[in-house]
Structure formats: structure tokens, C-alpha cells
Image (spheres, rainbow, N blue to C red):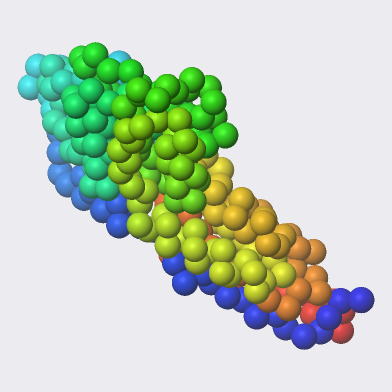
Amino acid sequence: MISTERPIIEIARSAGWCFGVERIVEMAEKLLNETHDGPVYCLGELIHNPQEVARLRAKGMIFVKSHEELPPLEPGQKGKVLIRAHGVAPAVKRALHQKGYEIYDGTCPLVTIPQRFARELAEQGYRVVIMGHIEHPEIQGILGHLEGLNAQVDVITGPEEVEKLKLRASDRVGLISQTTHPYERFARLIGQVLEHCLEVRAYNTICQATFERQEAIRELAQRCDVVIVIGGRNSSNTCRLAEIAREYTTCYHIEDASELKGEWFWGKKRIGISAGASTPARAIAAVQSAIEQLISKSSQASG
């Protein structure tokens, strides 16, 4: 039997766009709104949000996977390239300069921190261990900052892969993390590496906004019957929010309101909503409104 009592809808205290995402979207809007005599490109997806990427593409931004896809500029022609929030390797920027493109660097300032620390560790002779996904653009950017250095570098997804490193007591290990990874996993990684090595240097490179969103959804999920997480399925931080929520309750990861189903909310007393760092406030509002409409339809049908 469907309850006639209307459920409470609660949005996580920290959800949606972070500083770095808001910053680069503003940069993209400004570039597209300026009068210019050449194309505006972006290397890779600006952020991990398909709907936002589609919106900017409709406004004229051209997305390319690699700088190698950029066409040669005609004599007198200007071309602008926006560097995505995840950053790129220095070699990529050099290649863009050589092709004559104007570079607008939208790398999140917090992403530059692990880039800098990784290089410092390598220069000081540490074996650099990075916690992250090697295919992620942020990790590729970090690795690019280590080019030209004679350093041993390993990328692992978490503490469960420490044994693969075959660490020795004499190894001097430097640890950093992808900014969107969970703090507790990085802490476990540090502890496990310390069990093998005498000298370990670790930098907490996890974004504070990421940490706050993870803590907020942990609190929210424990008091909700169901949680909706909004954001790109290719977004690392959004996927992690869904993983955390599922530790405590039922959770559905969607990219936009069109994916919602009325039966998800039947008989529920409290519904939670959270969103990844690449999800704008308007998307959160749209999902909340859609849930309210689905609940109203269910109430009318049961009445």
C-alpha cells in the first residue's frame, strides 16, 4: 500500500558546483561571448558533466580529445584553446604554443598542488606513489609534470594494491592522491606503506570540497530512505558519492531529472539529494521539482 504522507526532500548541506568548476565554466562563457575571429576549442571535456558540455557545445565551443586534433591555423587566423579543469602536461602547452594557439588555462588551482608536490618529490629522489585512476586526465596531467625526471613513479587505485609495489625498507616513498579520492582510503594507504618503509612523505592533496561533499552525503544517507545523486557517470567524485550513499541506504545515480522513476519514492518518508562537483544548481533544482511532481502523481493515483 502506498503511503499518503508526503515525504521530506532534503538536499545535502554540501552539493553541486565547486570553486574550480564554477571558475572554468565562467571562463568558457566569457570566451564564447567575446567577439573573436577564430574558433574556441577545449581540450577534452571541460568538466565531467555531459549536459553542461552539450550546452557549451551548442554555444559554439569545439571539444577535441587531444591537441593533435587541432587544425593548423591559417595565416592571420587566431585560435583559442581552453585547458580543462583537470589540467594537462607541460608538453601539451608547449605544443599549443608551437601551433600558434592562444592558451586559456582553466586548471583548477587545487589540481596544481599535486602536480607541484609530485615533481618536488621526484626531484628529491623519492619513489612517487600516486593514488588515482591512471586513465583520469588529472593523473595524466600529474604524470606529464614528471617528464624528464629519472624517477620511479607508480599509480595505484588504493591501499589494496600496495603489495603490487613490492616495497623495501630502504625505499624512500612520496605519496600523493588524485584530488577527488576519499580521504579515508588515502589514510589507509599511508599506514600500509609505513608498514614496509622507513621513510615516507605524504601530502594530503585531496580537495576540501570533495571531502565536505563526501561527509555531507554520509550524514544524509544515514537518515534517508533513498538518495538521488546527480552528475556525470564519468565523474569520479560523483561516483564516489553514490558509493558512500549505498553503504547506508538505497541510492540512484542519475545525470538529469529525465531518469527519475516514480516507484523509487513509493512509501519513502525522507528523500535525499546530492550532486557531484560538476553539477550546476539548476540541475539540482530540476531534480527536486521532478521528484515533487512524481510524488504528487503517486498521491493522486492512490487517492
